[in-house]
Image (tube, rainbow, N blue to C red; front, side, top):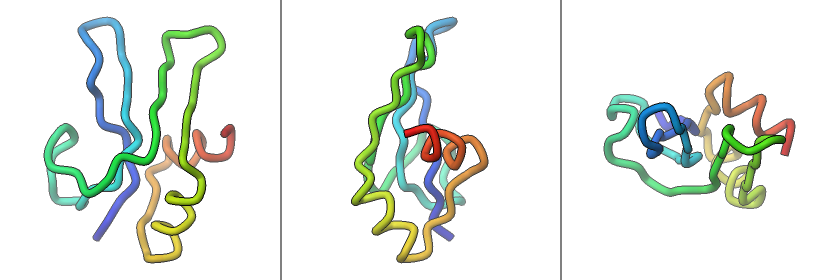
Amino acid sequence: MVKIRLQRIGKKKAPFYHIVVADSRSPRDGKIIEQIGTYDPMKNPAVITLDKEKCTEWMKNGARPTDTVKALIEKA
């Protein structure tokens, strides 16, 4: 099953995330299929960049967003 989820790439106590499409069996920071955006919670307000076309395309093809990513998509 394919999921749209966050991949952490930030340093300790300075989180930064890529919004990625990945197989649900792969580890959080493991192999990904495609990167479709970023999320920076350290900025005020938090910065979300998202390729909405790719996101909707993946969701039409059956990819399920996690709860956190679903909330980020609604904000973006």
